[in-house]
Length: 506
Image (cartoon, rainbow, N blue to C red; front, side, top):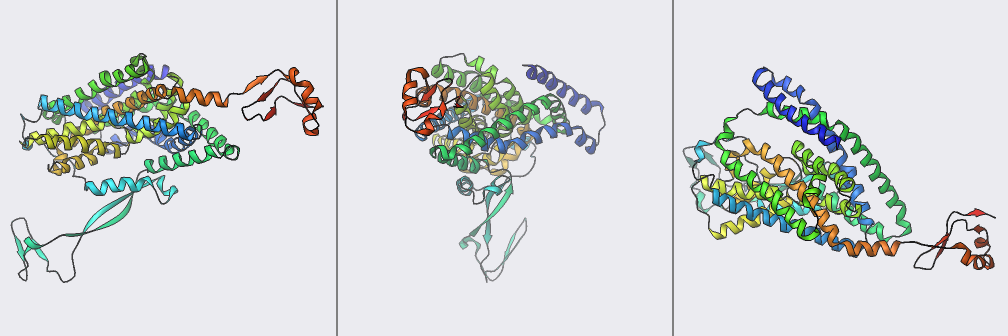
């Protein structure tokens, strides 16, 4: 617990340092950049370990499970993630419709920040499926595939001179009859294709698990890689308190306009209230109903992971700490954590789904638009689907927000109204996401207890008294058998194949 006790004061000191430097220190942009350097190092360390951790944990986790068992466990995990995400969306809509944070304000009262991400709903969903099957596994370690629409201007078609006030058309061309044609251009953008790696590791783990002894050497290799990676994670955790201090201080110094917090205060309160209810009441209640254990004790075991999620705002980067806490503090079966947590860090975004539902209705209220039942149902479906496709990286919710806004006919550019406070809300969303992943491991372990016990029983080796079968061994005509002397018992598995342990030569 010393890491938690040292990280919390560093968090408070980071806030204090950031406020003091902001108020009394006249730092240049270059000075601010240097001040945040130790925090940047922490982020780089955690991101560095994501790739070997996902590969080793997924492959070993799946290989350790029977293919039928892994299918059942995967189905239970996905059902749990889907149900909690839908509950989060419904909770967000109920709160924002009840509190109505956007009714008392107008769009013009809130400053716009940044630019609107160029996103197409259909293309984004197709890109999600494409990234599940990367064409180059090495490239998937550092790039994602993304398509972009480009408008086609047919040869010979007259061009138009466009200004803000008028459109001049040549050769009598009627723009009203024009049908826009697009071509889809594929390109690669920076960022690990986590979903593609998980799908590959899932299939690879199932295959080597079915290979028996021939695949055991690969299982041993990835087990060793996983153990070595976790040792590196322990080392990184020693540096974490210092990194947290400067990470928080640097982020506070970067904030330019504090007035926006007053303007969007009610909206922020609505989102934070929803996240608090979901994480303190709904998720623990589901855990208690299924597992019948104290959910808050389980949550305390995940304290280091939750604090890390609050600091770095990334489910994927928090994954190493989440695995450590789940296995070492809460003693969840490693076969469950290695399988469920990497998948959860990619597709389970309860906090993001709740935020998108609240933000969409908030923007509708700013525009004085009354949403009907059909549009609210559309928001539920779009927020759930887009949150599953969101990458576990900071501020991925802004891209998925555009998808949800477009689905209900709201102006996509209005996403710029909430960008100014997104960096703060994103941290709390990530905490809820990580907590949901953690509770998921406990719930799936409980539901899969029977299958896990059957696997343990089938692989259990029965130790037999060597003296009871000594005459059988010595009477055996096989010279290879006679060469082995039983010194501590020998094992008989269910296939009746006899293997000798602790042997020495006659």
